[in-house]
Amino acid sequence: MSYPTTRALLICGAVAPLASLLVFHLDMVFRAGYDPLRHAPSLLMTGDRGPLQIANFVITGTLMIACAVGIRRALPAGRGARWGPRLVAVYGAAMIATGVFVTDPQLGYPPGTPSDLLPGVNAQASWHGHLHWMTAFVVYAATTLACLTFARRFAAEPGGRAWAVFLAATGVLAPLIMYGGSVILQPLAISGEWYAVLDGIAGRMVIPLGWIWAALVPLRLLRTHAD
Image: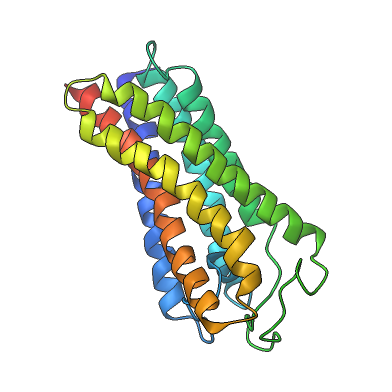
């Protein structure tokens, strides 16, 4: 594979997560009835404009799989050369699945949904709702493992220590916020407003944590590959 092709594949990974974040946040601002301090990010996949976010996840995941190929070509040997690209590919595939298997309406969204409805807690979750959360957990498990894998590699490279610190911090914080919000705060959200606010804050933090690292890895490789 030629260098221009490798570079194009890495650019896919550098651009896709940041563009996805932009689409996500713009859509959130203009969604009628969507409360960012109460409603989970995945709920943007429901409602009349849900297909926009479904496409956002599927396209981003597809481009990250392409990026994984570029990473494999850019890292022919050394730390993380084998498992780094594989974990990025798992991340991309799980992101596609998260978009395909849409979460259930809950906590008053989309408009018309009971405000105290929380599938899996006080109502039956659908099969696709179960699969959505399972694949979301895979996304963040892959995030943690990939961040730690690349942090180990970058820490040993000239000028890579700051990149490594950020990736290592992301690898620790992302699962804590994801699992803490989903397992602890979200069930409590129906019993108290403060829990709902904390769950909303966790939801606002977890998406950037789960996406930005995926852009930084190929950006770092584009920079070092060009030297």
